Amino acid sequence: MRRCSRTACAAEAVATLTFDYADSMAVLGPLSLTPEPHGYDLCSRHAERTSAPVGWQVVRHVWLGEVGFKA
Image 1 (cartoon, rainbow, N blue to C red):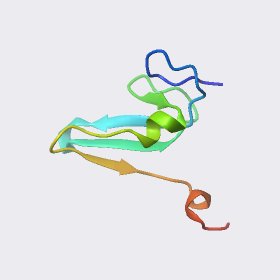
Image 2: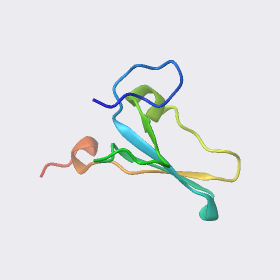
Image 3: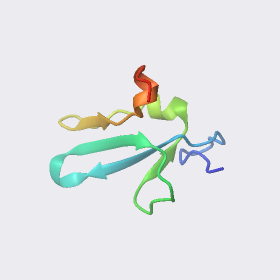
Image 4: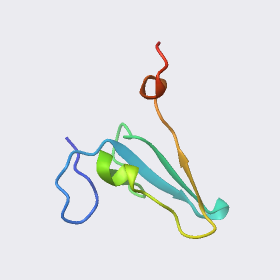
């Protein structure tokens, strides 16, 4: 189990947050298969609350099953 990267949070991580500085974009997706040195693993609470600085956009990738699609 990987823990949330946020300070003082011991919850299990479910998503990985990475940044694309050239495009002013924060990318939030499912938990990466391996820990990413420049990414942040987040629990569901912190992933839902993630925002970006003014002028940046947040791109959220989800598994198809999470938005009502069936395989």
